[in-house]
Length: 236
Image (cartoon, rainbow, N blue to C red; front, side, top):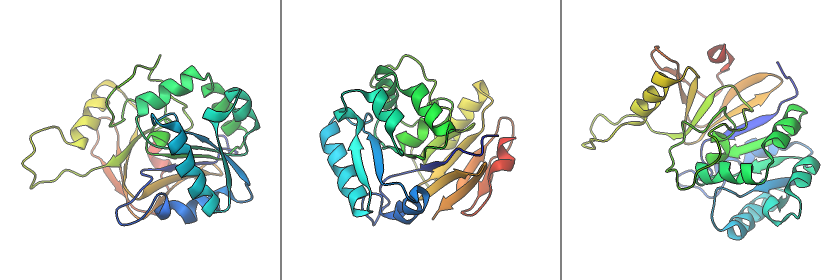
C-alpha cells in the first residue's frame, strides 16, 4: 500500500444552490495544506481558455495560484514541476483523449505515487479510476484506450442518481448501467452522489461531503455508505 498518495475525488463541481466548488472549498483548502500553486488540466471542455479563467478565479479566491496546462509550452514538464494537480469536469472521453495526446498519464501517476496532491471533479474523478467505463458521458471523441490513471483501485460513477420509483422514464437507471458494467467486469464501483467526495490519505479512503455513496460489487447487493465512513473494507 502506498501511504504517500493524496487524492481527493469530488462528484460534482457545482452543487444545487451554491456556486462553483463552493461546497468543496473547505475540503480543498484542508487537502492542499501549504500548497501555493495548482496545475489545472482543462481538457474535458472545448473552450479551455474560458474554463481555465473560471478555475483560476475560484482558486485565487481560496488563496492558491493556478496555472493551466493548456498554456504550457511543455505539458510533461508542467506535470513534473507541479505542486498539485486539479482536473475539472466536462466530457470524460475528451478529457482522457487529451491526457493521451499530451502523453502525461504516466507522469501524473508517478507524481501522485510520490505524494503530489491530486484533485478531480466529475470527469476528473472518473479518470482517477482504472478505466472510464463507468462514465455517464457520450463518446464524442475516441481516446486510444479506456484505461485511465488508476490512482485508485475502484471505478467512479460521478453524479450518481438513485432510481426514482415514481418516474415514468423507461430508459435504464444508473443502477442498471452499473450492473451491466459488472456483468463484464469485476471492479468495485463507487456511485458518488452529488455533494459526495472520496479522500485518500495515509492509505485510508474516507467518504466526505454532504451526501452518501453507493458501493457496487459483482454478484452482490449494493451497499450504502454515509459521510465519515471508511471505505477500505469495500476494496479488498
